[in-house]
Structures are given as C-alpha cells and as structure tokens.
Image (tube, rainbow, N blue to C red; front, side):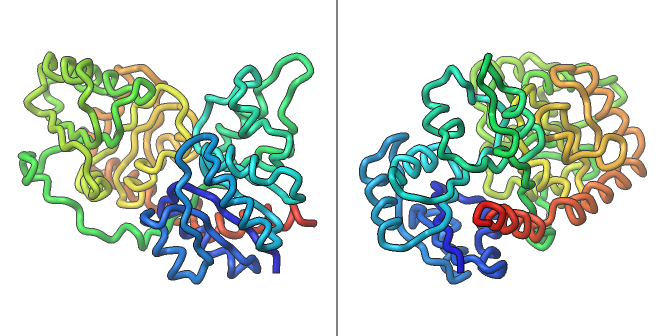
Length: 360
C-alpha cells in the first residue's frame, strides 16, 4: 500500500475529511501536525498515524529534523504539504531522499520568479505537483513568466476543496441577540479586515442604497482597523451596522441572514465563508475575484459583480431585497450547487488519482 506523509500546521474540516478518507482509496496516511490542532482528533478517529509537530518558522531546524527522521523511519512514497512553512521545511528535510512532493496553494498571488522565498516553496524544482484550490490559482501559476522561465504546465492542478451538507445542520443564530429586529433584511459579511477584502467598498455600497431599501449589515470577524471604524462612523446608516467581532459560530450568523456579501478586491481562492453560507441556502454576492466566480453561477446560485464597484454591490443587494422569491430560489440553488459540485467525496477521489498518477 503506498504511503503518504502529510505535513500541516492546521487543517480545516474539509481538508481533514479529505485526508481521513484517503485510506479508503488504498493509501496509508500519516499526518504531522500540532497536537492542539482541532483536526488532530479527526485524524485519530480515522485511524491515521499522527505525529505531533509544530513548525515555528519558514526554516525550523527542529521541524526539518523531525520530518527527516520520519522519512528515514518509514519508506514513504509521497510528501503532501499544506501550508508555506510545511513546504519549506519538508523540502529541506527531503534532501537526497527519493520521494514525490505535493504542495497545496489556497490563494491567488504572492508567488514570483523574482522572489527568493518562492524558489524555496512552489517554484522549487523538486515540487512535483501544486494542488490549487481553484482554477484561478492554477491560472495564476500558468500565467507567471519571465523570458525563459515558465511553470511546467502539468505541475499546477485544480482540486476543489469539497464539503458535506451534513456539516451544516446547526440552527441559524438568533440575530435579535445582536439587536437586529425580527423580519429585517440582513446583509452578512464574514471576513477579517485586510485591504484585499474590500470592506470599505461594502460600506460605500450600503450608503448608496435607496432610502426605501431598509437593510441591516452584520459584520463578522476582526474588523478593528481605524480606517474601517472611521468609515462606519461616517456612514448615514451606521445605526444599522452591527459589529459582531470574531465568532466561532460565524456560519450560523450567515445562515440567519438574507444574503452574504464578500466584496474582495483580489487574490481570493475558494472562499470558505461563501461555501458555508451557500450550504445554509444563504444567497452569496461575490466579486469577480479569484475563485469566487467558480463557486457562484451568476444569476442562478448568487450574484457576481465587478470588484471595487460599490454601485454594483448596492444594485445586487437591492435586487434581492425587492424580490423575496428570487432570494429564496437563489438560496436553494446555492445550497444545491455545494451538494452537487463541491463534494468532499470528489476531493478524496481526485487527490487519490493525483497520487496514483505520481506513482505510476
């Protein structure tokens, strides 16, 4: 049975479920990750061999030694890494060891032929495949180039991170506890305040809504930047903006809302917050950024608007606010799209197929 060593700092539920399902495809899976990671119990319950490893930096001598000792202890066929630190340290640990190496990339950008660190990660010649979470990520690698330098076209491959609707059975949150009245039309945005997330554009969109479009905006995540706080304070609708902060139950807040808006400007991969909202039949409004349009079929399972255009976001919100039947129909279509096109079973099978191709 082929053996695969997976190295990660943290695996979300979809990633952990994929690794837990690979033994059923004929692979012996071992995972090196921190014992305190939430996914540790998932791996243990699935019978995977788990090794406690916390990687403390891009080049961590302790981690390199631990990975190398494991590779020398067991005759592994593949090393699969799931984050930047894991890639760098695993590559250093595999020096002079004959093994296939797979890397994972979840966002667009921040890789360049001119960046020395990129050569220690995704551009390292020993990396056999880069698993891209969306076609947008794969296209980024294929579009990169300098005279005489291109990424091998077979190296980046798209494997969507699949989900299971049974993971999303919690009751929608009671928004009244946040001061939002029953029956209100609620726009939810789940994000951390980073420039690429476009949160100021969402506030501008809210301000551009006609007075007759009565809405509440629920912001979930770390959004404490002075710039964003100042913009919210200056909004004529500031009394209808609720800051929930970081919440473990963010998906249930999205489930209780009428629509979810992700106003990203650039570099999105396959946004988990959008998948979670769709799984709860909440209509997504996303920008044409990264992999978001691969999740949402415009006009069918949500709405796709140009990035950075507040007027387009406002028009999409108004369209859903004014047509409750459309909002409900799109929400059901969004949920059906996750059920049919983003299944964890497909992720498991495609990952197994990739392993078999490398070992052929």
